[in-house]
Structure formats: C-alpha cells, structure tokens
Length: 73
Image (cartoon, rainbow, N blue to C red):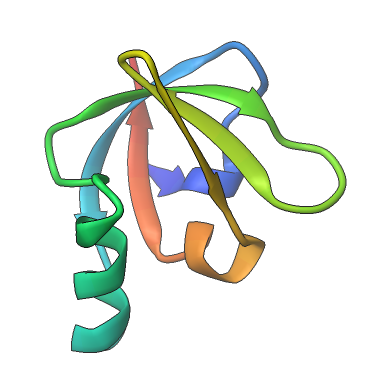
C-alpha cells in the first residue's frame, strides 16, 4: 500500500484508507473518493494529481493525495 501520489500514470488503484483529520477525511469523501473505489491515475507530474473515477475526473492537491492510501490493482 502507498499514498495516492505514488501511483503511476495510467495505472489503477483501489482506495484502502483515508488518513488525516476528520475535516480532511470528510472533504475527500465529499469529493466522491471513498474506501473500496477503484481509480485510474490520469496525471501525476507537476501540480495537482488528476484521477478518474468512472467517467468523472477529480483534481487533488499533493497534500490531500498523500492522505489517500491505495493498493495498485
């Protein structure tokens, strides 16, 4: 398992945990990123990460992405 920002472009990962304060966890979950979801990494270079969940794309700052723990699938 690793933080979300460790996933390579084009790879898929399953969300295992969301760490951090209650406020941060709530914000991440309100964005639609919940435990058990499978995401695809679209962009992971400079600036925010862009991930794909189904047909939806989300942009996450690197600090927030560090709190999302995933396992590549």
